[in-house]
Length: 130
Image 1 (cartoon, rainbow, N blue to C red):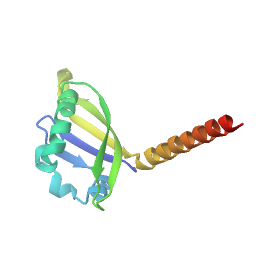
Image 2 (tube, rainbow, N blue to C red; image 1 turned 120 degrees about the vertical axis):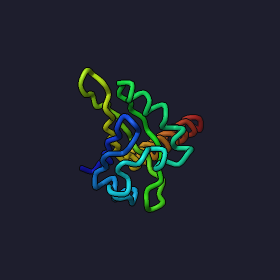
Image 3 (cartoon, rainbow, N blue to C red; image 1 turned 90 degrees about the horizontal axis):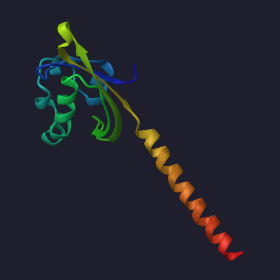
């Protein structure tokens, strides 16, 4: 699956990351399993993610976009979905996370906006000259 998939339990400990996640961030499943999210994420990232993790552990689904640095040192935009995992009595046992890299999509959207603005500017100037 070309997506970053992980599972974090109700104690905020990673239980699983898929191979794509390992390759993207340069971390192995064995190195991350059992570790708390706060041990993995930088403090500034933890501050950003803490309310989202709390929301999913309260039973809500959470979707957002964020910028991350891959193991190659490139900054990429990810679309992230956090989905609660309900156990017995509708208790949240943890959450599934699926993130897809939408960097190229965002770059294309930015290029399209720039092209449209240039076209508007050109047609406006041309119209004034006529």
